[in-house]
Image 1 (cartoon, rainbow over the protein chains, first blue to last red):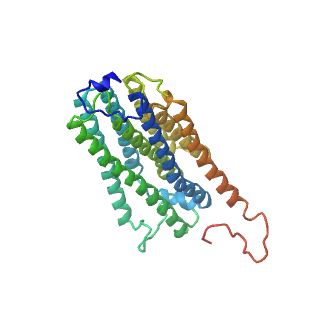
Image 2: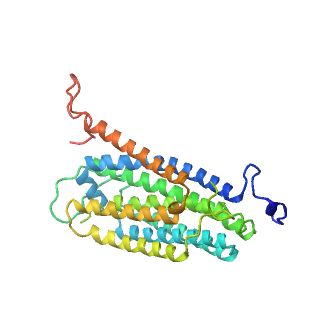
Image 3: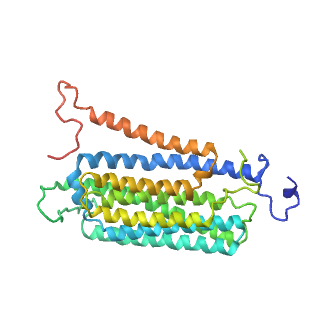
Length: 227
Length: 116
């Protein structure tokens, strides 16, 4: 307790905790509980995906063929890179390296925006190809070789799930970039110390979770049924 | 609860481990794209989801520090997976058994989605 009393920095230890370690343990557990609810939030969509993919396997393989694997793989690499910059930010915060912390947070934001930019390009392509499941939806089977006729309604279901899942994921990315902007501003103002920097790893958990969702979305939406 | 280092924060996983995990994730991404263009029959889906699960486990265990976390955090994570599995198992148990019983007045293939 004595380190708190003599600290020149503002006291960040809530009075009901005995130590910073206990406080960190507690807020981390709270973040994990939130992530559990997120698992169920995305889980419903993953369940819908599995069920409808099973019922419309051929139509969904044809629909999946319209997605750009190159852009999807690029975005996967971008997100994995952003997860690396996040763990480096957490590492810098633990070592008290403020400049490095700001650098890694800024890089995370840049990579997050890159992901969203590529996603916007993909959405625009889909919209111009009449693949957005709105009133102008039109579907054509572009696979090579001989295939059974694909019911456009079944292909349309794929794009409902595609836009639903990637849209919810993109919304999480936008929120994540907002959170990291706040962290960056607070870092530049010198709010975080080597002793107290809980928001960095907590926001990091959120960012990694969003990365984790994409790690599953990429093979499910882009890769399965392509060969 | 406070069994970690004295000044709080996640236990220190060294930078070499972070970079090793990052490289592994990148390599696995390349492998899963390559596999998508090969024909392994039904194994394609299994390989794609297997690689995704390995990548997800690497992120959760090392980037999210679950490997060194308290037992409470691990229990919370397992609970999340368990409840998702409840969702999956019960949905399939419902949809998969809808046509087992013939119910008078109900059209055949009641549970299937639209389409011819």
